[in-house]
Structures are given as structure tokens and as C-alpha cells.
Length: 108
Image (cartoon, rainbow, N blue to C red; front, side, top):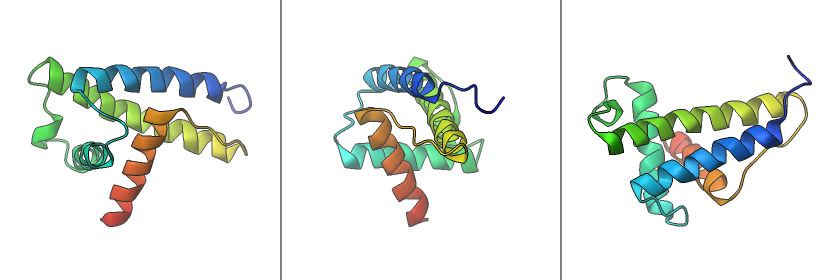
């Protein structure tokens, strides 16, 4: 229901999980090339559900796919809060991933 969402809390929870998945995957959120490669894979997974990067063959690939899902949640929270006139964002990992997703989408 609009107006009753706690976007700030949701952003913190999503970012906490993004950071956890990043630790499992060895992501350095300050390494733009690494984060952009991750964003490229996330977009490929979204476009082609049977893409090789989308198969949970082991715990690491499962963490990667879960991170892709968190990226989608992140973008949804940003969009929904913007629709209500609020600017929602997280910290370093959130911003790095969001920036990389936008850059990769624009590069297509």
C-alpha cells in the first residue's frame, strides 16, 4: 500500500544482503570493471533466462543469481520510492551496483 513503505529500511536490508553475496563472490565494490562485469551478467541473465550465468550449479553461482535478484529488488525500491517523491539509496555497494547497471544498460 503506497505511503506505508519504509524505503530506507528496505534499502538497508537489501544492501546488507548485497554485501553478503559480494563477500561470497569476492566482489570489490570499488573495482568499477569488476562491478560492471557483474552488471553485464545480471542484464544478460534478465534478458535470457537460460543464459549460462543464470544456472545455479554450485553455491557460488547460486549466490551470484541471488545477487542478481537483489539488484532487481534494489531497482524496484528505487522506482517505487521515486514514484512517491522520495530519493532512496543505500551505501557504497548499492551505489556501485546501481551505477554499473545504469551504465551497462545505456551501453546496450
